[in-house]
Amino acid sequence: MALYVQKFGGTSVGSIERIKAVAEKVKGYRAEGHDVVVVVSAMSGETNRLIALAHEINEEPTPREMDMLVSTGEQVTIALLSMTLNTLGCPAVSYTGPQVSITTDSSHTKARIKQIDDQKIRNDLNEGRVVVVAGFQGADENGNITTLGRGGSDTTGVALAAALKADECQIFTDVDGVYTTDPRVCSKAKRLETITVEEMLELASLGSKVLQIRSVEFAGKYNVPLRVLSSFDDQGPGTLIVAEEADAMEDPLISGIAFTANEAKLTVLNAPDLPGVASKILGPIGAANIEVDMIVQNVAPDGKTTDFTFTVSRGDYKKARAVLEGVVAELGSGEISGDNAIAKVSLVGVGMRSHAGVASRMFQVLSDEGINIRMVSTSEIKISVVIDEKFMELAVRALHTAFGLDKEEE
Image (cartoon, rainbow, N blue to C red; front, side, top):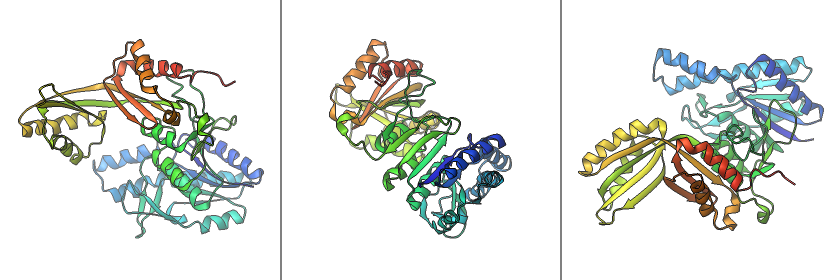
């Protein structure tokens, strides 16, 4: 008999019919003798509806009251799922985050979990009940309701699995695992049987939306076995996310290809090549709460000027450009160029550690397709390139084939 923490997202519980399907799935695990703790999100669209209501009153409502409001979405789901389970003859009890003592810091709308008291859950499990917990929420030490930020239900699931020392945390979603890339872009994408936490972190940070990045970090920190499964398909084992591969010699060269079109590029041209200029450019960008991703600096042949290029989220493009206008005025020289029609494509794989030539092969593939590389960034297990957005899908498909990800397993 195993203890599973199972998380179901908003799409999985988006209607009464789907809630009934989730209840049947949970009942099946209980029938096999397993203990089950279920973490659920609000029904799909509910959180957005609540936020819209708040913005009808105030465009910038206070964070504390926003947490009080949006946390109610999950409370509806836990009650409905528990009612359904009980109707099916599967004893169940529902709890909000504060009721099971998920204690967080006081950072409203983006709180972090500090402690979980698992005794109440254990008592219910010992009495044969399924425990249904509201994801995404907790309470600070003063009893104020807090939320963990978008996607926080994944984090709740992994945190409960860590506290309970569960055999596995299972994330049920609308896909049946983690794929080598998005099947909607590349029809030859394959589901991965396993992937390392390190690789999953890279894929999540680079645009893969299967898992919320904080939940993967949590799983890695507390060594929680994490499995991605489909809510709608009972076939297949999904994808298991593990701390590290058992035998690094067998690691595939590339595990996956991530991509995002949510990118914009800004360049300060002909800035003075002097100490502190990079800080003068990026300092105000950071002060404006704009996150910078890739950075490239090129010094002119005369050694007196430099072109300083960086990327930001496309939604921050206009704001960042406005900030740079003030920076250029302060520097007394330089001009600004920008491009908000770019995309980032990334190869990810722990196999890169033991194989040379991955970057050159990637560049050759893109060259053969007539795709110009605008920027490059690398880490130990990742290579990212910035290209024109119109070539993004072509690049993904070409790289997927070139690195052998299309091949059927023998």
